[in-house]
Length: 299
Image 1 (tube, one colour):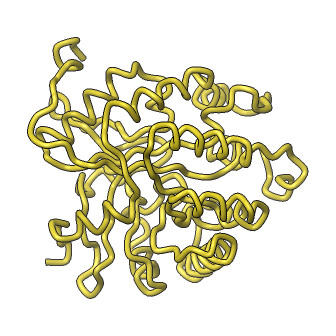
Image 2 (cartoon, helix red, strand yellow; image 1 turned 90 degrees about the vertical axis):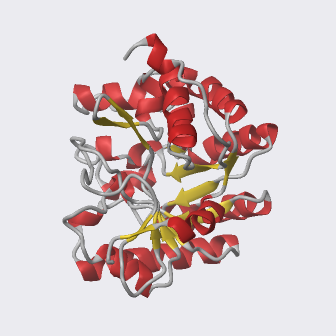
């Protein structure tokens, strides 16, 4: 990509973008799911509380509010932290119970997973949970029943689709912006942000892409979405991504280790720049804003 493309100036208005944190600990990520068993989690050093506290301070400094998509497993073990997130004006939403990808569950198991997580997060925080994000953006063409179950249990929105092709996830044919997946429900799906370049969709919503690529790429992508497309961007990251002191998983595949550990030390500084350069808000507020112009897939 050329420097000229990366320096594309913003156009039009300045939408409020969706800022989100996928709350899971360093040992719960998809990169390590085949080398760290769930049964071992309680015996590992938990770092999610200290990392979320650092993020809360970062958000306070920038005067922004965000949505914390939280695992029920984490909420159950960090109930006071859930209350602090709510008390500081942020939204708590569901990330499922224990990071099981949706397409690895059958419909009944998924229904129980989202019910259990929602109840735990609500009980821990005192806040109603109306939003959901699938672990590893794992709602796709293989799970046509997932949105139906979310609507059935009263969720107002989901941010669970990555409209790209990726080796770990992706629903390439999904719309890039907010859509209604069901004919008989107001449930809105808000995909994670992608940009377009030379006829290709590029993942640009945060996480590892934000850590590994130059900051200029993310700035260009968000400006494209805000300006040319006139839509809000959806950005996410994880608490472990600001934690260079976390334990190393030596027996994980090299590709997984590179994805997980690259540029951890520079993440906080890049986030501070991102929070200064754009306008940010909670996902529930963005969902209400986007609902009137959401594409109706069932029409």
